Image (cartoon, rainbow, N blue to C red; front, side, top):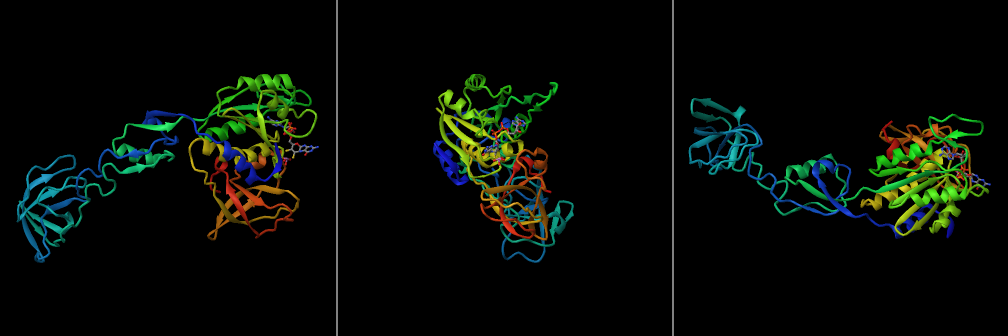
Length: 405
Ligand SMILES: Nc1nc2c(c(=O)[nH]1)N[C@H]1C(S)=C(S)[C@@H](COP(=O)(O)OP(=O)(O)OC[C@H]3O[C@@H](n4cnc5c(N)ncnc54)[C@H](O)[C@@H]3O)O[C@H]1N2
Ligand code: MOO
């Protein structure tokens, strides 16, 4: 087992063990926020026929047309109909936005540039051949790969598939994640709080973050800091892609999570990551099941979820790990200096074309309230010294709290 490793080394260790879940075929309308497991090849061209992008008249233009034309209107083509009459020279068809271009026409002139006199249409501003025609397959060709595997299905991608008539898609099954909070001090909401006890909040923050990631969550009831109960409950969380525990990860006599993980036959890959908050995080693996043991401190648990668990779950669900890191300007100072790298929770402010990071005044590992509305984690390197206002540092986005401030 490796210990006190960098965040980057932790990612490497996690990457080596990543697997994607099985696939399933589901209806398009149920596919939002799922990840494509099989590329989609377009069954049709889009648009499926040459069509008019505006209301006007279709006719055969030539480059030698005079400054004004007079044409016989021989048909009307509303959207949804298909013209079977071929236009001859000197003829035009009244055509509406989205309607197919008739055979014999090579342009559309907009209605505003014409003047009807009965069935005779004066074209006051003739257009050149090819004008105002949206060609068949202009957006997508038949048999073209429209979406590649590992694409996240969003409103635009699902809409595109609907436009192509695709009824079902093959996606990765949703990740199933088990949650377990540990700690003899814990009580559940709804229970009375006796001296020395606190309410379990980690299950609630993590459940929300997992739902944001599109996971199915099975939360076990919290367990006290006693090995037999920990082992029993962990053993009950079967058929999961990953299990996330909080608490009992540090060095005290009641910090038993690593022993419990070993007790269920888990191989421990690392313990302690060299950043704050959340240093005592551990990773175990048993078969294909990942076990992330996070600090019990509520803010530390959320931050290590962001830094370690979410990138892993993203890759397990078939997505590319493209966690963006970008420069931010500090809008406030943080006076504490430390040997360890630290991630400061901060709120993004978009001002004068720059992203400013306003760090919360409370950066303690246990202060959950200070996470509210924080959409940035500012990366302060180890040994950096106090962070000054106006200083430029790198930051990562926290999607779960990610409203633009
Ligand atoms: N001698 C040392 N002590 C500690 C060290 C160390 O290196 N040497 N590391 C500290 C650091 S850093 C952290 S972080 C914490 C992590 O401790 P654990 O993961 O063992 O977490 P607990 O002790 O169980 O809990 C910490 C804190 O959080 C509260 N908690 C726990 N679970 C929940 C929950 N589900 N909901 C709300 N709050 C929870 C718990 O009551 C504690 O106050 O260790 C330091 N100690
Ligand atoms: O690693 Mo702990 O920094 O207090 O959360």
